[in-house]
Image (cartoon, rainbow, N blue to C red; front, side, top):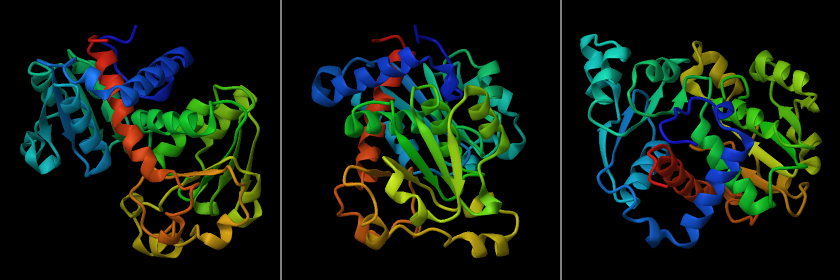
Length: 306
């Protein structure tokens, strides 16, 4: 039962609940008109203390397609946090007006803190370098639709694995399914955090590391590209040195399996060349649309309308 629950990290959902959300999203994709009024009278608050395009707009579009309403802000400067209001007080106030909250913050743990003071479900829309569970649901719905399920995949994560919250979230979620294995492709400075590898070790999940994408791309069923995130660096020289570490182009794609898919949480900078967009294995713009549908399913579940 998901009604009234918070979603802070992927492990807040059981495997069965992930399947339930994805199954509902698939129903919505096929018969979107059947769901256009299910959230009438419900309000979603989008509290974005950090800039976002896809995540914020997809949450808002999801609620509007369900017949509900949206209020909130897209910039911390538009909130009373600029006056010194605490997050706890902001959440106490906002949760008295709405039925569900989607929140993004640059601070790790902010969504968990918000959940302690909210009277309505809080959905973590990204908290610093920690987790981004609804992007994970988006990724998983895409994998389910294009690769037939969640089991038996070799998944390559490439780029900024240290700060990439979407990487951390998807690795945690996919490690719960049988016969998956991971290849982490990054420069030494951006390797996946120890708490992720420790989790994989404890779960007995196979993983390897690599520094060259070319050396492993032929082994992958799923390639998850990420950008090197300028906003996570304290030293701009380090960012400039690392930002072009990996660029996926047609030449590299020729080495990949015919049925491999390329995912990316977006936005991209130059880590995927535009020439790859026309490759049928490029699935990142399909991901965008799946993201709206999976958030429709999640909102409907958390608010108890379905």
